[in-house]
Length: 194
Image (cartoon, rainbow, N blue to C red):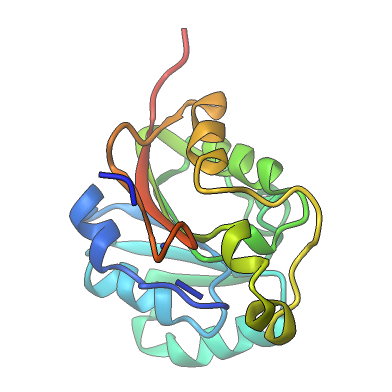
């Protein structure tokens, strides 16, 4: 089942939903919410009860706040780093049923720290939905010209799923690569250690 899209934006919900299912009534977190489009998908298609939507860019958070105004108390937009969610959200360990990454972690300088933070805030049995861009896509001339990404320690289609179990996240066979290994989609479950 091996074989991902581009903020460089994502496929946003279709395939990850089939791989991991919905989270009816669950509490979710979207890292890198940009304008709030992914947060809407999490609420409407994944059926989350509440979503904390974070982005490092205050302008993006303002855009998301405007887009999501109709969801009222079901959404909490905040400025936060994917590597430090505790400060902005007062997020607790084991606080979320699901965390969503619609093509954001490849933008994070220390992507492994972002994966560790995802694992920290998920409850045991919680799911990490990811739609990521690999170094194969980032090295394409068009992507290099159009987008700004960190240049060191980017992941391949094999590196990302191999890193997940180091943090207790297990995708098993619920992931696949697309477009010649440019994109990686899947769902990993947080399993208790020991």
